[in-house]
Length: 188
Image (cartoon, rainbow, N blue to C red; front, top):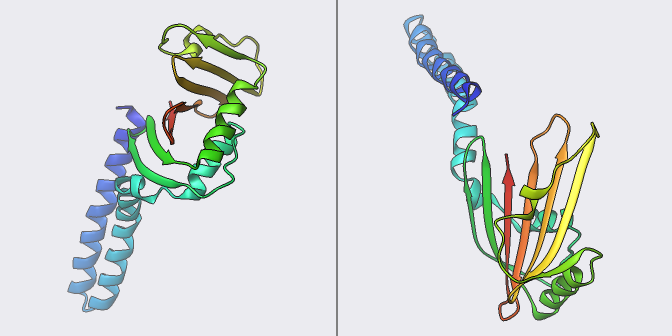
């Protein structure tokens, strides 16, 4: 856990203590309604972000999935279903989403991967192709995409790094005999 997260947690605790203190101060002055309002307002500053983080997996919608797929130049034409979505980590972020897509969209994704200029057929699984990549120079942003087939699974890996921002890695995978697309998104 980074020092920034610890400072943020201490700030949240301080705000919650101020929330309780303001309630009792206003109550003692005879301004109960003002005390309730101020304490609820201060508590909401902390509690709303905490609840959003806690329920972030449930707040992932079809528009979010389409946005993730658009980042790797995949557009779904038909309706699809979000089977599951799991998000873990803070501040490091890892998300795994399973989408059930139509046969037409499945074939389109496979063709997108197969017809890319850097498509490769690999004989064995590798941990990640990005471990072998090094970026040189001081560019404003760096993007790289790998497209490959391992056994019966088509995979598109996308890496994006913009100076001053955390790198984003998105992996799309789809097996030949399945209608389930797996999206893995990692922000370090």
